[in-house]
Length: 111
Length: 114
Image (cartoon, rainbow over all chains, first blue to last red; front, top):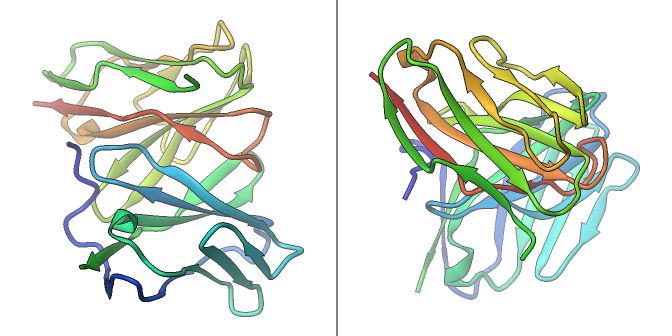
């Protein structure tokens, strides 16, 4: 399948542990943020989003935290599973109808 | 099944030979977009369309054209491909005119220009 990239930052966690993936965004005027998951050979898949008027949002096993003061976004995955192994991208809406994506972080889950 | 489809999935071509990558969605989405993905650069937006007959440039539009004559289709056209357009291309759509809604991505098209 298609490869995403060979030199991404990598986070390696033990199965069952919690994972935290971080992202620094660029524009203080950004008002919407998204996390995507991309498995090998597939297109990005929506995980969770958050608007700038919130600082935390929870989904099923995932939580997104937004710190506007330091322009930082994080994705927390609880009880990480082998199926969570993928590349994770954050994206920000900072210019009307366009998204700007971060470079991605590879999550590897050790059994 | 709700999905975004792209064709072809893989394409090897030569410099200057016009090509079209098709994108179709069956979700009646208004917003459609094209991205390219390159190692170390992440996903970059090429063009997007808010609705039929409405298209706008993204971050990296040079060398590409698009059209939106029907709601479901959003083809990407490379009039004269060059090697620097070798990349992995994704089409995406979302239900309303704007990015503040979940985007559904296609499976990707791997293009190699020699």
